[in-house]
Image: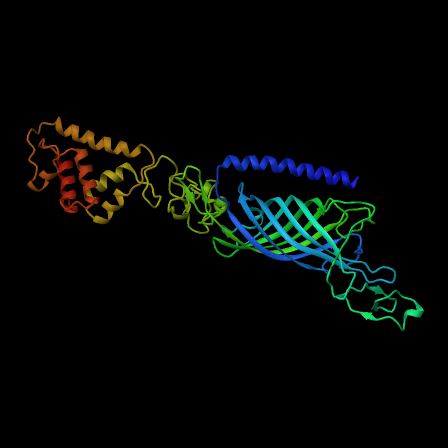
Length: 440
């Protein structure tokens, strides 16, 4: 049953790998995103090691090199090559087996980064990840059965190693040996001529540390399911052998070059933009219609400050919070009546008011009605019995169409010029202009 489950998992991973390679080809990216090199340790779980033994008690060094290519937002595909060894030595009354197997592993795996799920930072320093893949393992089991002089080890019950087997009559003749830990003897199984290669399914949990935009460090702990029970040249147990590994690596990121050779980019991970919120209003920048909202201001679902009376001025600066829609308001949210506008235009001569008036935020068509009234007064003036209007000399420059009359649109145009800092138009001329218009 266990073998069937492992076979199914391997077949599933193979199918996923083929589909992913097809997607990689469709991206038309020519360069790989990163190269990683590292070192670590390997340990073995199998027939000779007891289940209650710590898998970290026998660690052997390993080194690795690999390439990584980004696929989607948080997902990449990796190819890794690992070289190292595993070893174990029994020291029991009735069994003193030992072995060391050289290990060569090449695997393809899918890696998923959790930065979107576990971090709200726009550019997190620590990013956890998980990977699973499919690999090919080669191994060669060896044993240390002889010392440096070629004498075979014989393990005695008193804990010593001697050059002859344990017998009472041999006690005085024997010579104590010391293991040299040189694994000189190739191990084979006389019954089963097993292959020294196998499929593997590596599973890794780890974290990536972003040191610079181009240099990262990864720390990972892995567990590999194997399709062989002969890493130790022993198949007494029912299950297959397994490998436990740890690794630390340095990652060197590269840019990605498109096939059209027109667009080049570096390897920076831009996926954090999806959660970036520069004004910290709770709405990400990609969905924020008002990206510069002041801190701690209540906003709606579009990221804009709340405007309860819908007058176009947000509540936090609205000095008249209930002015309502369809009102002419100033920049502070205070409504202005038509009568007030006409009165101020005809009577108020202060520079401060004129500037405030010009900055009125018009949110509807009411202001157009005021202009219509100005133009109606102009029309009435033209139809009056006054046939000859003398434009003061200082205002002739404002008669832009040179028709000898000052009209409402020329007044508005002159006001625009004044706020555009046209030196020809002064506030005194504006006041004189309005007074001339309404008095005639």
